[in-house]
Image: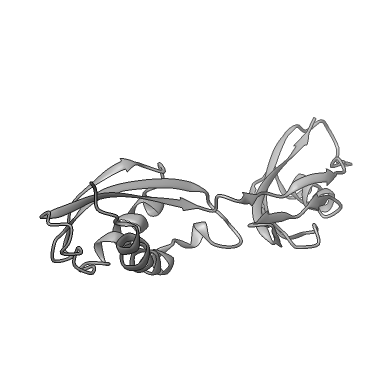
Length: 185
């Protein structure tokens, strides 16, 4: 017959690690950026609550997200001692850290093509950064990679007329930063 660790894990381990993690989540995983990722870390808890033998089980491929999860476990030491009824020397666990699992980015519902009224033929793409507010309107538009002042100005002008379905996080409408490209043919 096994030992039921649920009360120990649910009441002593997870709350302490979660509290540490919430303080360490990088800005890129918070509003308005909502970077998504999944990190899994294996570790051992000694009978006295010390944490050791940590290893990666899954990386998010983003070092900032990975290290925040790692540090959340590391800074939670010591945890509460393992219940003495268990009788073992240590307990091996895996914790999954999932960043923004219910985030849905904004979606374009109306766009207008950019028009260039300059001389000669120009082509290419202007890359823009913007925040889509909770009403679905583009705000804070900035050129990341442009094609020159005239085309950049026309790209910004066109993007201001776009409409978006706003982003949601956990079912709540939120502002979110995204990038968009405006193509000139």
